[in-house]
Length: 591
Image (cartoon, rainbow, N blue to C red; front, side, top):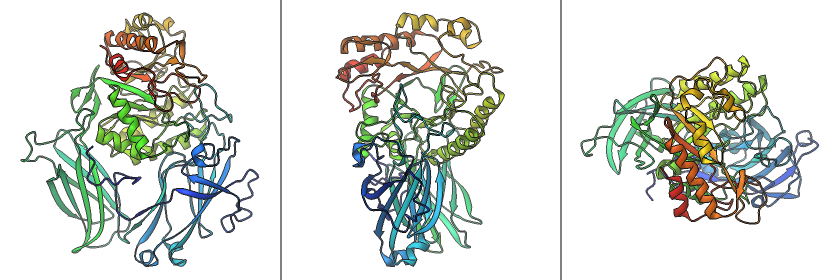
């Protein structure tokens, strides 16, 4: 398997790679704080003895070593690590959390350094001062609080303390990697990478933490080891914008594009210079992948592209929302590819960023979907919009992401059909996403009751293929508000005041066939099948029916694996397929 040039196994931030990091996962001291005594009693100075936990796994999971199913809304972590005193004197030390749910406070050597609210994105603290004071000995204390608040983005995490239906057990506290890195005093902070499909260049928007005179940025772009562009530009302030041409005489086709079938990537090396001195060096990569809607078609790099997607929720039996290791992230994408899918709708979860890296290099289109709140209010607006902005900013550079999905099935906006405030939130999320990223599709409310949206996406779990076909035999009439009686069991495609404007139409949830292939008890949509043969035949008939419907230009099958009591996966939770791989692939690829 070909990797990006900057790739380092286990590195948690694959699009901004340095070589001086420390993995802080593993065993930590741990405590529950049901009575909220930790801060008043100073646990950040004297941590209570007793429990241990394996980070980054939620305390409810077997992998955590705790395996405690009782709900606890406050948890604490504590660990000491000793860094090189010399390195601490020369460089800045940054502490990173890839994901901690939901409200996080951090102390270093008993000193409060900051907090973060949100469960799904990376956040960081500069802990240089504390590390220098102690000569490199660093004690990290973390408090995480996660109430069953229906106004915060929860995704599939039940807010009633137990699994029910398609909502699962909660995740509290650290559930993604914790790590640290040494960075130079003058360092590159961020780089936003925007390739231009039509003009044959790539734009780099770079920022340094501290501006100083004489600071330059050298950017070397290469493809397959051959230099395509080598530019050096001076900083006149903290930010810098540079365009680099991509046409290359050594390549037959001059420019390479990214698709799931041929995921061509360019490597990038950034060298931050002060005079002749290299003060910082960072590796990255990018791909040219522009996805737009054009009448009744999805275009990828200006070519018609039929999306064969699978819904995926990223749960594991022994580790919950956290993949047990990096290989599991890679294997899930390879499993979807072997089954004939070219896309994954990452449902109600922002996955470990290495998942998106493997989608980039292996070739898998991703729909990035925000975990939903369950209730609408001023608190929902503030929390959802704030965290969604973090999601888009953090994952913008990944070429695999072809669409952004800020809302799903009106969760968190249950009256969006007629409530102007809820419609306004949908519109705000759509437009802020477009303002940040005009090259990708934005779906305002996946499944139904769309406001402004680049695609019309519909959900339908009809299990009879003839009925499914007849339902959409007049797709245009349904989209324009006709045949409303046929929606007795479904929600309307548009909110009041919005109507079909000729967008491409996709069925982004269907099938969901229940099949108990083992001893597990649970449910699926419609009457469960009794065996592998019936499972494959029903799946193929439903896919065939959709492919015959004029005006449908893509689909998403529910779902890749079973999750808890949901037994509608193509595979069990341990990734064991429920039917022979070649039979499933044949069904999914049916036309």
